[in-house]
Image (tube, rainbow, N blue to C red):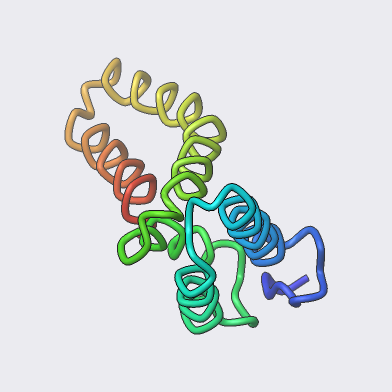
Length: 123
């Protein structure tokens, strides 16, 4: 696979996030936490903000910004940031520890900065 995630690929991050957003909107509508107009605005934003031909890596870069305009999506964004942390934090901690033991403080700092940039900014 070339990294491209087809929309019908149910394992792609694109598919999972769009499903999670739909489920979230339905739940918030059913519990009257948002109006139908607000749900429509969010859905329109999501359709415009997330291209169908997006890789999982590009999707991860996009996720942290989804709640910038719509706070209702913060639950979803926080969930994916937590998943990122669970996946990459132990690896980064080990690498940083080794770099510090070797006296490579600048490389350790660079690696930590990259981790936090990706975690919070998706970049």
